[in-house]
Length: 84
Image 1 (cartoon, rainbow, N blue to C red):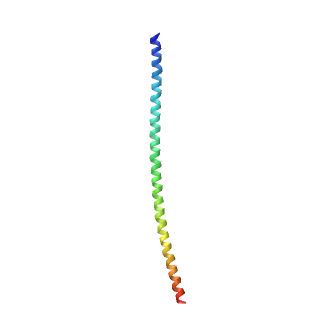
Image 2: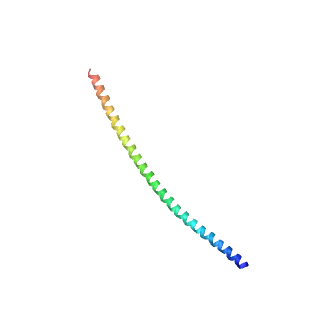
Image 3: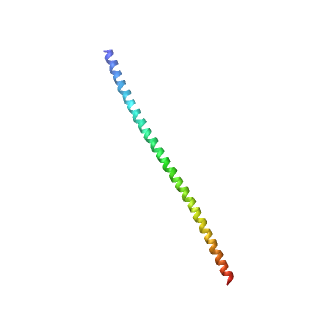
């Protein structure tokens, strides 16, 4: 009877080990999927940061051109007022 009980316990242990192995495999797959997702999100974030930097550069260039145009207009206005 003792051997039957030991065999039953071993069978239970084997089932638990098999369950743990399957769980570990599932967790490894899930971890790989999450790692891939993190890399994808980091890439998207990097692209957005680059786009934002480009936008900031363009905005500064536009602002500079507008300031130059305003300065020219002010100069013309001052010259026109001085001639009158």
